[in-house]
Length: 225
Image (cartoon, rainbow, N blue to C red; front, top):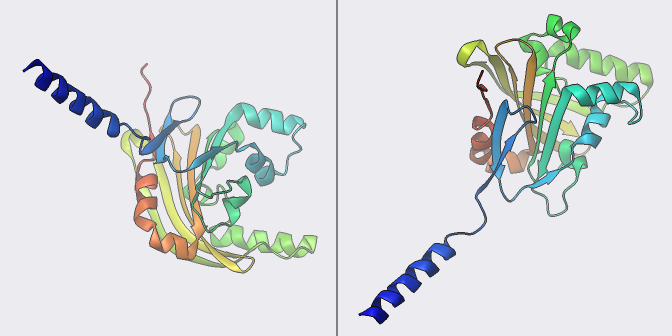
C-alpha cells in the first residue's frame, strides 16, 4: 500500500511539473502602473529608446530628450528570430510598441480624437497631407505611401476615458505594412497610452485574431487613492 501511494504521489508530481512550462503570456505595465497589456511569451522585449529618438528626431544627449524621458515610458516586443527595433516599420513578423505619455499643459489643450489617431504615424487626411508637404520641402521621397484605412473605431471607456482604435496599411519600400493602433486618453485628460501592432499585410491577415487578443488586453488601471 505504501509503495502504491508513493508511486501515485510521484506520478502526480511528474504530471504537475510537465505542465509548468514557459508562461503563455508576458504581462506588461508602465512604470506608473496605470497601463496594462499582455503579449505572447514568444515575443522578445526590446529597449525602445531608439524608437523614441527616431520618432522625435531628438539627439540622445539633448535637453529635449532628457525632458521627454521624464514624461514618456515605452517598450517594444518583436517575434522575429533576430529581434530589432528597426522592425517597427517593416517586418514579416509581428512587432508591438507601447508608450505612455504624461502630457504637458500645451499638449492637453490640443488633444482630440484625431490627435490620438495621429499620435505615432500620420493617419488623418490633414496630417498625411502635411507629411507629404514636408517631404516635398526637404526633397526626400516619403517613406510612407499608398495609405489605406481598414478600420476606425471610437472607444468609449470607463470613468470618462476615451480613445480610438485604427487599423491601416502603408506601403513602405516594396512591402505593404499593416498597423493596428490603439490610443487612449485617461479620464483626467493628462495621460495618453498607445499600443501599436504591426507586420506585413499578409502576416497580419493570417494572425488578425492573435493581434485582437493583444489589442483587447490593452487597459487603463485605476490605482488606489
